[in-house]
Image (cartoon, rainbow, N blue to C red; front, side, top):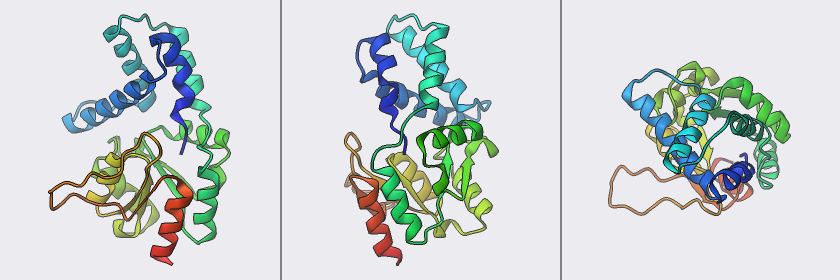
Length: 217
């Protein structure tokens, strides 16, 4: 829901190219998953994001200073929502869907981020993986959401802009929908019988919302 390109000026200043924000995010997800899969000690998401930025500095021979970490923290807290998000959330809310979040970010950070973006009021509950201390797409995270909502996983549809998150949700028994914005590929066509396919795929949240409303109305 939030636009990570808001962080791009920091990466352009440090590494000379805005696209390094995508490398940072990819590495952040990689290492969060590696921590969960390896059974290593849980590291809060922002602490991990700082470590990954410092690691990138070492890889690319760039000095990452404390002021850069402070800037990363400030930019992360003030990311705006993608323009399509408020109207898409409004569609789903008015259609009667229960809206909740499930994020890798700590609870306090999530509350501040969504409030700053002006979209916190759409959700009945904001959930974080901090409770189970396992990063998505670990199945425990989606089962936790079902438990907190007192529903079956099959009654949940995860809407995400990340196919890896969709895969995790569907393999945990949820439905899923993919917002395939520019830079996000739609699900690949593979000869794998158990490859889960999202229930809806669209270029923006209103397009996905319209499909979900038709499917469940």
